[in-house]
Amino acid sequence: MAYPDLHMLKGQSALVTGASSGIGRAVALALAEAGAHVAVNYHGSQEGAEQTVAMVQAIGGKAVAIKADVASESDVKAMFDTAEQAFGPLDIVISNAGRQKDAAIGDMTLDDWNAVISTNLTGAFLVGREAILRFRRKGMRPNVSRALGKLIFNSSVHERIPWAFRVNYAASKGGLKLLMESLAQEVSQERIRVNAVAPGAIATEINKAEREKDGGEQAMLELIPYKRIGDPEDVGRTTAWLASDASDYVVGQTLFIDGGMTLYPEFRGNG
Ligand code: NAD
Image (cartoon, rainbow, N blue to C red):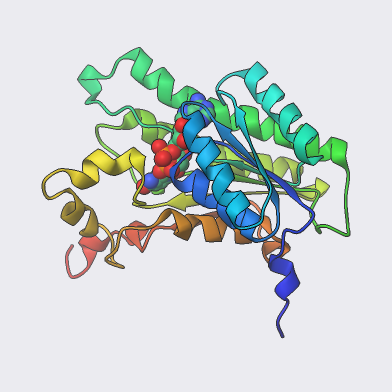
């Protein structure tokens, strides 16, 4: 039996952080395609955010761009206020913003460490906490969704796979795993669904230099059994599903979207 309506997000409002580019933009588009109104957060690129808004509008959706640094407590509160002023109480929050600042351990400065932890982990805490407070204030809307709210973090395969020369990034995503699971354990009985997506290698700005250096793409493909680099849309579609009632019984899970990277392909016929 088909339940097409379960995938729909009509009448729902969503906020996506770091949506001026890459995966965040694809998530915003996928949510809009399913019928949600989308607040598009950006930090650096207003132009990128406006482009995302225009892309949503081009498919008949509604979106608004909101500037905020997810690592700032006051920015995060103001971002939620602006989003709610635009589209009413939020049903879906996607904590996607993230960054890398790679360095060998001997060269990694405290600034390199703090920059990544404050965006990827503290930012996720601030956005997650605010999302839960707002979901509670909103109350259930049974005609719209079976859940009080859906909170989805964008983690990484590096919440599981250690990553030399990027200990700040791997530590932030490892922390995010237990932040997500502990939050899910704390608030599930309120019908708040907390989950995460964990992408593998997806073609975006974050890894452009790595992909485009000599032999870079080939080296990445060796780590991917499915033998293709992922597109932001691969993550967008899955995230929209996780935000919909089609996944209503999925609680506290990390969904790996990685072409099999976490299968450790080096062990195929070896070891
Ligand atoms: P990206 O660089 O295109 O997007 C990152 C976004 O986060 C940018 O729009 C950036 O402006 C925003 N951002 C950074 N710091 C911010 C801050 N303090 N406040 C608000 N926004 C901020 O790269 P992407 O690949 O789309 O990254 C999105 C997420 O996906 C990140 O959390 C990243 O760790 C995760 N991820 C990406 C991959 C990949 O292969 N691309 C793999 C695993 C996980």
